[in-house]
Length: 455
Image (tube, rainbow, N blue to C red):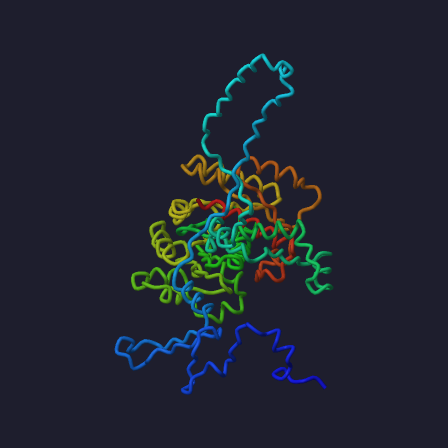
């Protein structure tokens, strides 16, 4: 068994003359403090919280130089240190060796003096690329990117959704796939949507369209009701229809039905004129009106003794009242253009709808109406008029419909044909639900043409 180190003579001989290391426990005093700073430790310094200069300050305890340096760095902003640059290396100056000279072999001949090399003129310091490539930070990219206008461009965050197809093969595929396959609307549906957009165009002010003809029974009142219901369906504001027919007009009966109108209180245009001075609100005006859905109507006078008593001045008073509450008004003028109220109607009209039929007499009367308007100071109304040909009686094949349309198309702004429909020909209630799709489309075209004429 080897001897302990303190008793090993060989170990003591090797250590002779070497300083004896002192152990940590030998360096401590009796009170616990270290006697020598070489111990490798640093005493923790705790400030005296009772010192008057540190009153109110938080107690800070630093236990290492690393923590103290981190605290100092956090208190001072870090200065930007530019990246190191590399200076361009100068080309080495080469001297001709002694052995390469032509007179190197002749020691007695002095060597010719070499021409002095003039130093290159100092040039301006050039920008040199840095060792490291400085990549832009996210903050730099955001700062250089223009801020989008979120208010005027809300579509930046929402993808545009295709309109839902209705009917046809596209609509069937959309329904069977639960909307996963949306092929969008077809050409026919896009045309229908464009008509709806034209009808619903916002208007500034109030406008009036007069519907007239020289012959009765050719679809004038049914056109007024069908177009009025179409306007009410697509427009945000309710339209108004006025029955100014001096021959006991039936506008309200065609919009509500004979039975419902008989049960309602008999409020007519004569009652409205009698109390027009007391009407100062839409609520007060509604007492003298009838409502077919969102279409508001003023009934004509049914008493034959007073039905023809509406004058131009009285109509203008009603028109002025209506313009305060409705942006679109339709006026059913009745037959002819010479009755008492007609001058006031034409004076306040913004455009006209001329009702005509496929019979030869109906086409001739429509043309005569346009000529009469042009020759009596209403050239603009005649030029911008909309001629509506209603196939009410379903004429025979002997009548050339194309020739009649061509005869009238050149003297008006637009010509629109309404096909034969029992819901119009019977002379009873006109509702959009029972009309043929072709008839409803014709009324939409008329309504869009009317709104297009409002300037």
